[in-house]
Structures are given as C-alpha cells and as structure tokens.
Image (cartoon, rainbow, N blue to C red; front, side, top):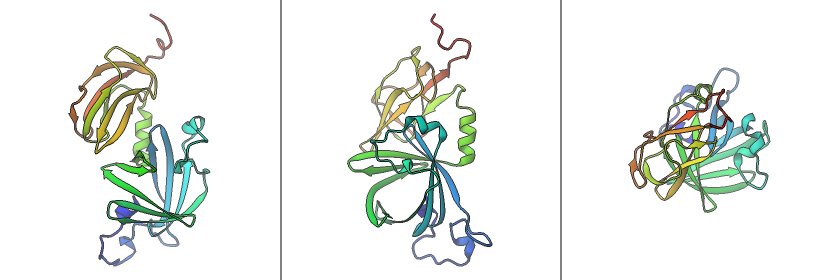
Length: 223
C-alpha cells in the first residue's frame, strides 16, 4: 500500500506534502490499515516511506482464539512490536527486506484486494480503512448479499437456498487467474438465495449469495 502511494518513477519530491509518509510538523505520524487474510485480521500501522519504514502489527482481539501456532503468518507478530522493513517493485514481484532477509512475492492487486503468492500458496489480503471496518463490523449481524471480492469464475457452490450455515462456513469458491478464493459466511444464518451458478463468470462486487442472520429468539431452537 505504501508503494502505491509513492510518487511515480522519475517524479521528484517538491515538498513534504508529496511524501506519503504521514508528514506533520515535528515527526511523521503513522498511517493505519486493517488487513484481512481469510478469517484473520490485523491492524497495520506504518510510519515512513516504503524504502525505509517502521511497521507495527497488532492482531484483532476477535481473532485471538483462532491462532494456529503451526502457521507462519506475518499478521501473527507480537502485537505492538515494531519492525523495520523496506519494499520495492520488480515488475509484478514485490521485493521485501526484513530482518536482514530478502523475499520475493509475485503480486496482483485488484482494487482493495492484493493477491500474494507465498511458497506455492496464494493469499488474498483485503485492505480496509479503520473507519470502513468499524462501519462494516457495526452491521455485521444484519442481512444482505455477499459479494465477489474479484472478477472471476464460480468454481463450486457448497450451499443451497434454505440451508442453515455457521459463521465462517464455506459457501462457494471463486477462481481468477488460477487463484481460488473461498467465500465464507460472515455470520450464523440461513441462506435466502444463491444468486449465481457453478461455472458462471462474475464481476467484482457482484452479489453471490444472500444470508439472513438468525434471530436471537430463534437461534439454537429446533423446529
């Protein structure tokens, strides 16, 4: 994200307002994003420019119970720890230097989603501003369609209308550029309607499925 905010190649920095580093009188402030990968979210704060940045990663409290110590995940850093890192582009490859190590990650960015290839696996990192995340979480228990995070093809549909689902349960799989993304239920609820078919081409933010939240007075009651 910091790289995307940098001036274009060859563009000189005229004054501090051209520097995407949270400039202010005294010292730079931090820019903050909420990054989500699958069911895991982290608050990432960055101070400085991409070539020489201080990065602080803090886990969302809601994800603390889902930790898998056997999984290597940048978002699993100790909350509040400061990391010094630098990054630059080499074509479509993101080159990251951290802890005296250099790693290369093939990367494709589609709007708010950054797709990273890491050791033969693919991760979809979704960027959300803190304000947008708060608005989304405030309405997390409401009804509404779940939309496609990218343009692609529906590979499989795992639920049907009328079926009860649990939070984080896989609903369908969307594929784009040989990368698969599982669409999961954001809440406990009932599938009202499946809006697409297997094999169908879908656009970015196209509604895929509608899941209604389970009412508090009926949740867990057999009918």
